[in-house]
Length: 321
Image (cartoon, rainbow, N blue to C red; front, side, top):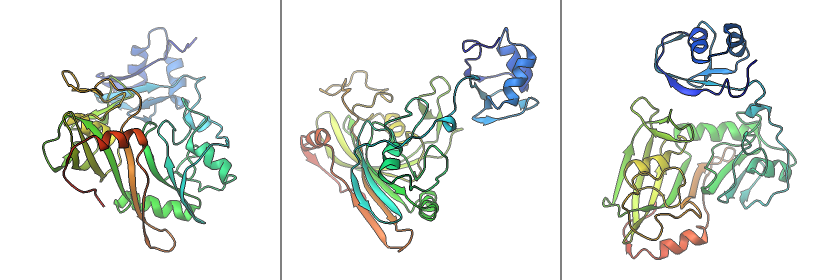
């Protein structure tokens, strides 16, 4: 019998050969037939993709197995919920939302309820663009749960297609504000560091030469004794991109619960701050999918983050626009 404990596997492997044979060797007590059944049911992924039993492993892949009784994201029933929404702008084909920190954008196995999508379905009576997946209707781009700020949401399929194209060609511009640990010496700079999911911790992403291209611009707006305020512009939209990039250059975001490496020996009252992540999607600029007019939106900085910014005495640059 295959139990949850038996099939818990999500790791990098260095074995070569057929997928079914390698997997059988990694799962003592599980028969070759049971392994093939898992593969045929699409429960086994190699580097995030379902493969056949005869797939040849080269020795540097990440294997993950989904429990037969574990629901997938696509299996989740996405329900409408009456949730408070901060609507910055709305017309017949799109909305711009100011998402609060703490709200997840779309349902997942860990957060099936209380998400932005649940609230949008209720507010719009289900009238959202189909989107790229059933569990994320209308969603063009995401921001992390603990990040606050602006998102554009498509009501129609036409709007979703046009906005997604702008996201892909980088004409949909997103500007973030972050308060980070340490004094950033450069007035501005570019971070070009490829990113890949950390095989040792699936909740993290890390810099890896074999990862996907990731490009972030930063500009220093203010500096204090222990902290700096940055304006950040995304050229790519990798998961956790800003958070990983800032940790990689030695300036993690205040309150980031995951990307905190390099804080050993740091001074200041917010070294162990856990009450909120100081990253805010401050400005959004895109071309309207129907009128073709350029639209620019900004939203207020959360009060706690604004108080920290006001305490930084040395001012330098201007926001990205």
